[in-house]
Structure formats: structure tokens, C-alpha cells
Image 1 (cartoon, rainbow, N blue to C red):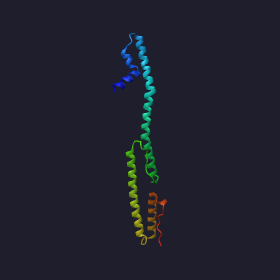
Image 2: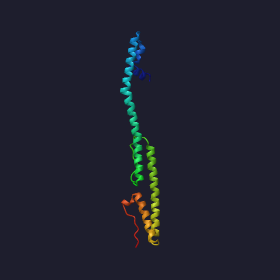
Image 3: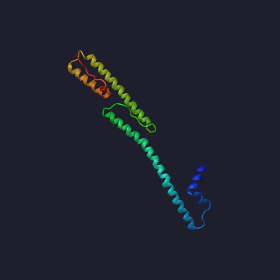
Image 4: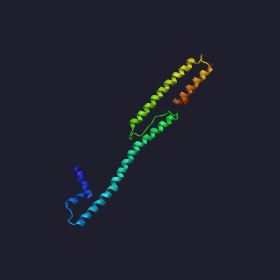
Length: 161
């Protein structure tokens, strides 16, 4: 630590000001001005870009995942339940991403159970139920099937003989 501070002091020119202080006031002011300019240049060339790089990296690793999670939730809100929310491995907010995916999977599991129960009720009432009730049940099963994405693979309608 002492070595790195010594190297930084040598780089910035601070150590020479303490080793051999000038005896003339003008020389002291000139040396102070040179040190001020050197420090300002160092700050502008290294510290500001480094701080900007750190800020942008952090911004992309936090705001990017938030934007991705927001798009995913909007997609679910629009009725597209396919896929899961994915963010880059090096991004922050991995825990939030996992929680969102877990919550959506739990909701899908509940919807599947409700869909299966509704399908079973429709099949049990198929022979005895009036046509209006069968049509209503068919509509409810179709709505849940669309939400679950099953409508793309197989139609779910009740055909009564």
C-alpha cells in the first residue's frame, strides 16, 4: 500500500515538492501551478473516463435486466406465456429474474390444474348437460387452452353425438 501511494505521489509530482521545496516565491507558485495542471490532466485523462466506464457498466448490468424483465411481464400481460425470462449471466438481478420465472411457472401450474379440472367437468357433464352449458364449458376450456398455449397444438372442443 505504501509502495503504491509512493508511486502515485511520484507520478503526480507531489514527492518532489516535499523533497526540495523552492526558496523563491515565484518558483513555489510555478511549481504549484505545474502540479495543479498535472493533477487536472491526470483526472481528465484517467479518473473521469474510468468513472464513466464503471457507471456505464453498472448501468447496463442493472437497467438491462430490468428492461428485459419488464418486456417479459408485458408479454405475459398480452397473453403470451411461452418461454421464460432470460438475462445475461454477468448481469445483476439474477435473483429477481429467478423469482419472476418461478412465479410465472407457479401461475402456469395453477392454470393447468384449473384447465384439467374444467376439462374433466366438461367431459362428465357432456352427456347430461344442456347444449348451452356445454357451449359455455367449451368456451372456458378454449380460453384456458389459449392461455396455456395448447390451442396451437390441438383443439379442445366437445363434440356431442
